[in-house]
Length: 578
Image (tube, rainbow, N blue to C red; front, top):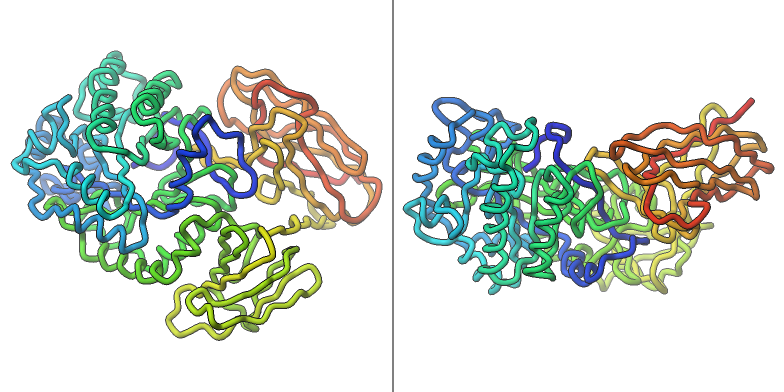
């Protein structure tokens, strides 16, 4: 997996999918259909590093660092690591048990590490003898076993492949790859090993749901080569966002958050958060920092409520067995999913800016209110909901109808006491149509500027809320006046405001003219030119005059048609001029 963001200069951009969405690529909607329905998947980090279990020659990989990086962290020479790999003999590996565990937890896809950064192939590769069948006494192809077990269980098989890094291949740069420039013979590694192995994976193991690339790559052209290979071999296979340079635009079908990452709010392209059950991804016998089942459930619900997918990692031991703690956690999660999976699979993001009692997921005309913190008065308040409630029940007890009422612009639902020990009580609310919620109103404070950001914006047209791998969020993809971001603001009194815009330009693209307007007044400003991606700066856009007090809509968008996306918008600040 990726080290902390910023430890490597490789990379890419974005992800999500609730109310609005950017124009899809040809076939992308069809490719993404299963992914949006699944919402929950299993990641498996497993290889020769699992045999070492976080220790080599009396040295230990510190808990909190990734044990699958042991070759790098402890500077194990490639020839010595190769000899250690010969001892890898996972006699307790049971594909059926792994898949049973995933299915029992409510997971619908499984991502298997076919090759990690150590360069060892965890399948029968004909490209290199450095693989689990030819190099070890195991003499079986675990990926073939998983292919068959997943097919029987209805779990979608996916593969992780470290395309940019290979610490065993001298052409790929070795174990100090992270802070070095591109190696002289790097293209030879790509053509002789990385691409041929990926071709094997896409050819020999049936339909692959997605290829999970990691840590980006040096150039857009190199990334495009992998994209073309996947598209040309299995057109229906998804490509994750880490295929491309992290500093450039997204080249995959969906975006990955940073490891264990979580956006502050919903973003409007498809996305996924990878997380592991303890602190490391590969097995370490020293890591006992296990997450609680209730924390996993809360995390799953929160991610889906923001429009994302959750891929949760297990790190099997070197013998192939899954740690008992991992099994116990996932089985507890599965008990909750057996009763509540309707609110997860196929669900979309919440239409509400916030829900203090917990989270909300949506499916067609249904709201699923995930109550983690029952209000003291037992009343769930849904501000701005314009729909009529047809019926509200407990998801696990549909025969019990809950009382609902309209209080001003909000809908109130009264829920019964929560049973002792309940992790999350789900209230199922049937509406008279897809949910329609009034946008939040930002009220001016007398002692501070008005801040308008991506989180409280309402987007329309092609403009969408997005993520980039520098760990920041923005609105982009606007190329015409129909692409807008708007905010509802309540002003205390008329006045003049200095408008300051935090944004970044796109390298190699011209500046575009944008309009910011309210109440018949408007100002125009140029997006900045840029030499690098996602270098945000503050522009003084001019002065906006607000003629009347009260609530007004403020709108930002291009003044004219522009051929390319030229501005990544983060926030806008209105500073009252005395």
